[in-house]
Image (cartoon, rainbow, N blue to C red; front, side):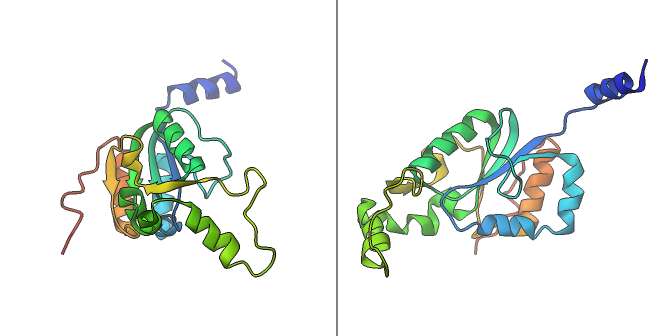
Length: 193
């Protein structure tokens, strides 16, 4: 057998590493900053998984057959709504990552207004220094939903990882369990007081 064929056969016999994704919707990206706070532990996790989609990699389209996805942020606009449905359809284990994803948190502070129009007016008309106008080019600003929604209000969620942001230790625990094929038991890891 030639060396290339032998290498390809060895690759096909090796177990597939879990395909992991991270994503943020409407939020501040603080949960991803906490993910980066794993520091050297990221190097420990890297060989155990394939990071197939994330704001920290240059993949443009959310792939099929993702084993686990940590999704930060709330569903705040039409683009978020479309994306979370795609993520759910293509992902085995969906983790609601951080308080905005779990409850809507700060992102949902506009919900008492009941409609999105006052947010747009305040942002683009009332507070504009130069050339006050609503963005009109398609794709510049995705249309806001009238209500900001936590992820589980739109699609089924498999695991809730609260915190604003969750600690690096908690994120490491969850990712370590997921890449080993286990469902993380957060009961003893979360403290409320």
